[in-house]
Length: 34
Image 1: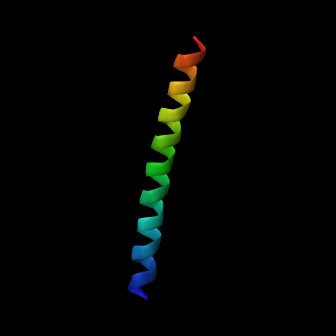
Image 2: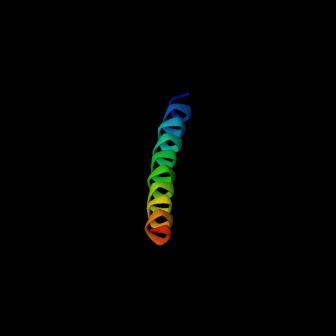
């Protein structure tokens, strides 16, 4: 049962990393458009 909780925490971490990468890509696009 404890493994399920660890998996959820891992998934949340991955989501935060993906969000940070997306923000960097968006910032790069905005810099190119200016």
